[in-house]
Image 1 (cartoon, rainbow, N blue to C red):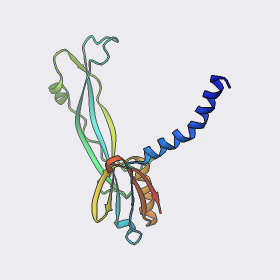
Image 2 (cartoon, rainbow, N blue to C red):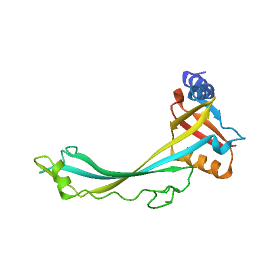
Image 3 (cartoon, rainbow, N blue to C red):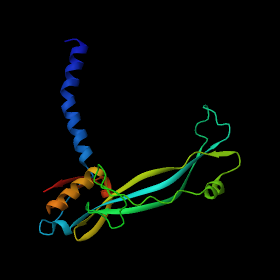
Length: 186
C-alpha cells in the first residue's frame, strides 16, 4: 500500500469519529428546560422590545474615500414598546409587521437646534434617519426561579405560537445558561 492510499483511508475512517466528537462538544454546556404543561402560558413570556431611534451621522468636512471611518453617530429621541406573547400593546403605534411585531409611535424628529448643538467644529451632519431595533427575551421558570434571558426572533416566534396554543415549551439554553437558543412547542 502506498502512503497516499493508506493516509486517505485513515482520514476517511476518522471523519465520522471527529464529527461525533465536535457534535458532542457543541452540546456540552447547553441546558434543557421544560415549561409546565399544567401552567403552560403562565410559565413563560415571550418579550420583544421594539424601538425607533433618530440618528444622525456627522462627517468631517472634506471627508475623502480613503478615510471613510472618520464619522460619528449621534442618537437622539427614541420610543419603545414591549410586545408580550404577540399581543398588541396598548402603546403600539403600528403593526403587526411582517414578523408579527408591534412598533411604537415615531418619536419627534430632532430639531435644527438639537442637531447643531451636537455638531463639532469641522463637521457636517447628514440627514436624520430612523433606526429600528428589536431586543428579544424570554422569561421562564427554572426550578422555581424566574429567569429572563436574551434570545432571537425564532425562539420568540415559537414562544408566541406556544402561548396562542396554550402549550408548554422545551427550551435549550446556551453556554453557561446565558441565553435561550432554541424553543420547541410540546
